[in-house]
Length: 265
Image (cartoon, rainbow, N blue to C red; front, top):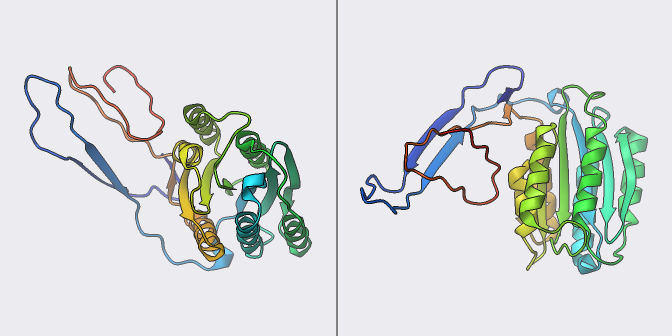
């Protein structure tokens, strides 16, 4: 666990769904671990941490119309709230990947340029989600050393219908875990009614971020701005939870959470 500014005291509560295990074996029990971060003192906007952010927007054909417009308006809503302590990249993807803003400081000129670039996005073909996301992550990673103390994050806006490049959820989760280990987290926003959550959930769970579900423009703007607000109040990151297993007990994780196995741990 990497603490921010001071060592936080995280509360841990663990419990099984049932208290007994059948002695002959073949029992399945669910273990829930809840970790609660300490409260963060109220702070003004000038005191928040800087953000090294990449907004990655799905501009494939399935996003045409209201979905792409919602993603664009959410991105613009975030850009308008950034300041000159923040660094932004904007990437869009279809079957191709385009970088519209590359690691630019969000002063007045930077914000104006970024808003103009996002406003001009249009739908254009198939969906290479993996390459678009990875390009956004590369922009963030390239600025880590030059922006010490900043929160390094990718926000991926998509309906999730990936059909080119890497599409396997487990493979995407493995890559997301590696990127997160380098210090770059990823959150995803599933856009529209009927979006495909498989790849988006895998990336967010393994990538140290969150997956959000939003349909309308207002909902998408709300969840993305909430995500951005939380980035300025992080008290701990890369938290690890360790289990030591008795002989005869096998462990499986639900979802795509990244795990490591070492002996009985």
